[in-house]
Length: 290
Image (cartoon, rainbow, N blue to C red; front, side, top):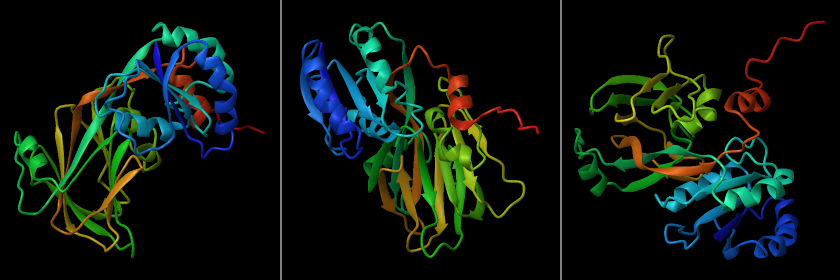
């Protein structure tokens, strides 16, 4: 078994953990590298599996950098929530050998393809690929793609279309388009629906729209979300997974659809999705009585 170790050395507890784990790991697998740079291309890695020491953000960066390479990823949480990096450091010795033997359950997590095109491109489906060739920005998101108003924080105008350029127009602070894995992140904080990780859908949630009736919606997995920016601020920005971003200008369009690629995420046998929601986000928590 060839293993790539990805570690977020910016977290105080990770560096001592790496120093302690390296001899233990080398006695069990063939280590093909230690990656601690979120910009490294992992699509050509020789690894048969990837072990991530960090938080959800570190694991998300791996998903983006794999660029569709189907390598099982196990995340050990040294961050805060640990929705995706669901194993604790104390659980690693118990589950590492089953992980490298391929005995732990893997789930296919949907990714989003995100592109930005200029106002002269009118990408009526099924011309998404043609639009991508003319894109000035491309990225992949495991959690979400967010159009945010930015400084000086006046409302922006967005026209939202599903499978077409034209659609409904609204004013507000932005728009969140989330994959199922990201439905518990910014999407949930903004009042959007929580999707089960295996649900094939895309969440669309406006951020503080100037409307009392603009509710979040979920569209099908084959839909293409086309958001045209009609009025922008100098700081209006598209942010993918909080890690890659580009400034947006009036007239530009953001196209988002489900990627053909997935992330193979190794699941913690001790953690069910409902338990994660209840323990980490206090979902369905009972009220506190006197």
